[in-house]
Length: 495
Image (cartoon, rainbow, N blue to C red; front, side, top):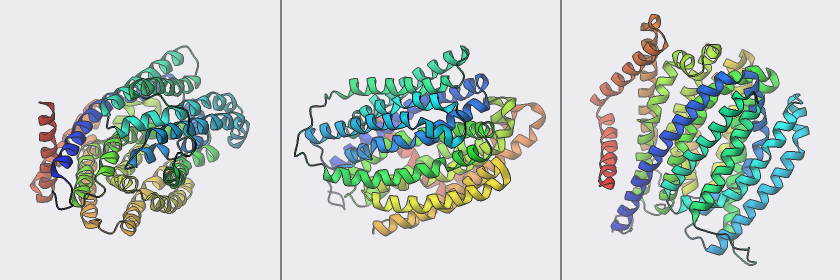
């Protein structure tokens, strides 16, 4: 037995499954990120900033329905200690019904959305997107079942294949001159493929709903979760709405491309890691120090992988923008730099979300998100006085202000949280990323006469040197030792 009273063999077995899941997830997500990066690179050259701006408006408003479609029930199903077949069946029909209702609401609300942004061409685009909510509603519990069962290979294959299918559709339609409709059909095809693959991989056929099935706890969890997600969604799209209303579609397109390149890709990397971390932490929620150790190692893993790439993007934003988006997007380089820096702070604080969900403290998550969104909106509105770049700066400042608030709300709800460990880790890895980003920027200046590719390689070399030199610091060596230990477990799992 470990000090928390858990069987050691059981916890070690769970740890091995977590390592295996992290390995599969990382490989699958790496492939998906390559495809998404290709999507940004290719489509940025086939479509205009105005077309991207219109599509961003569609998703910013219509996407609110996506939160209510899930109603927090996917995470509720994953987090629950036990889940009967009857409960899972009923949750499926609830999510499917919500998806159908929301599809109708979005379709008939398209006139209001087009009027809100003063762009009548949005009307058919919103109506086309509405079908996605029905597809995603049906998919919700299939995906939750795969996650709860720790079937990470199935999830990785699903995500990769659907992303490739969506990109292929978008490229073909863009080449044929469909314009912004290429983006609409991209998300529609992707949602359809996810549904088909998830249902086929799940090995579960939903039965008819049975009266008297107890799901009150799921609905309570889900309501707090959807409230938190709703507040988060408003905060995440406040910048899009602000730029769209104040500056128009083309400036929004110039903001949206670096946002997609940095934030969405960062989210795509963090999301599958959460698919591993949350179910494992949910099973460890009563395991005492092992729970906090798993969360800490997760923070370290993000800090020395994804954060390193974001530090490079922060310092080498100009050549990265030129290579990936093309010369016509160079005005977006400062935006990309600031958003990459914001993503660093978000990533290092992301373990907090795992704790909120796995501990079931979604009410605290809602309260934190409410305050965090207020902080973000204020920063964005103030930043808007300095144009689109000012909005990006406001986004960055808000992430700096929000992370200590998250820790405060967790500590209020969970008495035994080793808060100092996470704060010190955050500060250490943030400082290291800042040094690397500054070095990358100096590297691009030094190689300024040799073209964008040489600038990027020079920046990469400096970033690698900074992290290698940091190994002389004892705390950093301990972090790296944890990563080496995790890598050893991965190698043993492969044998």
